[in-house]
Image (cartoon, rainbow over all chains, first blue to last red; front, side, top):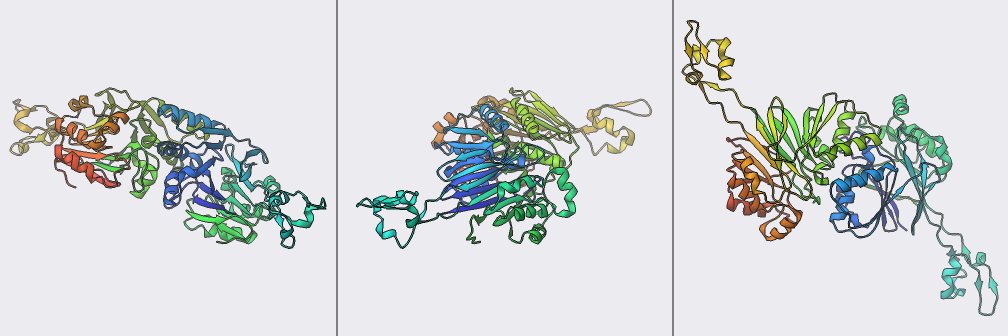
Length: 307
Length: 307
C-alpha cells in the first residue's frame, strides 16, 4: 500500500532562490493530504501535476507565513475549479479567523464545505481518524504555538497463513482476517491464531516543522518509519537556533536516534546554507540514516525504503 | 527620465501554468512601486533580480485573492531582510484588518513602519503625491469594490530656450525654469515666455485591473501614454464578461480609443486562452496600438515608446 511524502518546499522563513517555503504532500493509498502550505504551494502542486481536487485535508502547524500563506490561494482555486467535495482544514484556532475574514472581504461563498478543526497543542491529542489513518498532535516548541502531526496507518487485517488458506471458505476470509475464529460446517472451532499471521506493522510518519530541541517528543516518535524534523542551522549557530527556537541538524538527529526512527528527513534549511549537505553531514554523525528534503522529491514511508 | 512598467503576472483568477496572478512593478526614475501583489509576487521579483527593499509603496486595487495574496509574504520578507524604511500600502479599507490580523497571529512586530492608506472609490480622488508623481483613483466596476490607479509624473520645469540661455545668469536659471520672469541687473524685466519653452508633457500610466466595461472612465483616462486595461475574454464570451464584471478585449480597446491613449496594454487573460494573441487581434481592430502584457516584460511609458 502506498504511503509517500513529497517535499514541496525546504526553505526557512526567508525564501531563497530555488527553495520554497514549507509544504508537503502525503499520499496514503491514493488519498492526498497537504501538510503546511507556504506561499505558492498551489503552483508547486500544479508543477508536480497533482490534481488539487483529490486533496482531502490540509494540516497547518503554525501561523508563521512560510507555513500557511498559500492556504487562501489553494482554498480559492478549489472553489474556482468547481470543487464540491468537503475540505477538512486542521490548524491553530486563529486560522479560522483568517480564512473567514479573507472569504468575507473577497465576497466568496465557497461552493464546497470547508470544515475547520482547531488543533490541540498537546502531544498525543487526537486530530483525525479517517479510512486511511489516524493523526495525532505533537506539541512542538516554537516562538508561537506550533503543533506537529503524527500520521499512522490504521491497523492492517491479519494475514492468512499460506498453509491453511485453502481450508477457509471464501465467505469467512474477511472475518478471519479481522481476527475471528473459524467455525467449520461440522461445528468445530479453529482458533484464529492457527489460521493467520500477525498483520504488517502500522507505518508512521511524523512531521516536526518548526521547533526548538524538544526531547519530550521522543516518546511520541518512538519507532516511526520516517521522521521529518526541521534542521534550520548547524551546531555553529546553536545559540541562534536557541534564540529563534529552531533546531540544529545535530539536535534533529539526536531526536531521531533516541526515538529509534527508521529514517530522518531534514528540511527548513536557513537560506545561508547554499548547499544543505553540510546539515546532512552533521546529522549523519549522530544518525546515519538521514536524508535531505528536496523540492519535488518523493520519499517512501516504511521499512522497505526505496529511494 | 525613466518611467517603466514591468508586468509580473498576466493571469486571471485561476492560475494557469506559466501565467501568474496580477502584479506590476513601476520604476519612476529609480523609485519602485508595486501595483497589485498576487500570490508568489515576491518570488517573481527575486527572479527579476529586483531589490525588494527599494520598493517604496504598494497599491492594491481590490481584495480578490489573485490581486493581493502575495502581500503578506512580501511584507514579512521585508521584515526578515531587515528593512527599516517605511512602506506605504494603499488599498481598500478591509486590507488593513487582514494585515493586522496576520501580523498579530504570527507574533510579528515589524522592524519598519508600515503606513496603510485606505483608498477612496471615486475617480479623481487623490491617493499619493510624492517627489516623483501624483497618483489618483479610478472607480472601476467589479463584483467587489475595485479601485484602479492613475500614475502621473509631477510637472517638469520649463525648458530654457536655446537662443536666450546665455543671457540668463546661472543663479537665476532655476527660478526661470519654474516660470519666473528674469530681472536684469539694470532693472529691466524679461517675461518668462521670451526665455523658455513649455515643459515636456507629464507622462501618465493608468492601471485598470478588474472591471466591467466602464465608459465613465474615459474622461479620466484622456490622453494617458499607456493604459493597462484588463481583457479577460473575447467578444464571444461577452455575456460571461458581463456576468463576472470583466471586460472583453474589444471593450478594453474601445476605452483606449475613446480616451485617445498612446498605447493599450492588455492583461488578466482567462486561462482558457492558451495563446493571448486572439485577444490582441480583437483589440487591434478597434485600437491598433495595442500590446500584450507578458510575464517579466518591461514597457516604457511615454510618447517615444521603445519596446
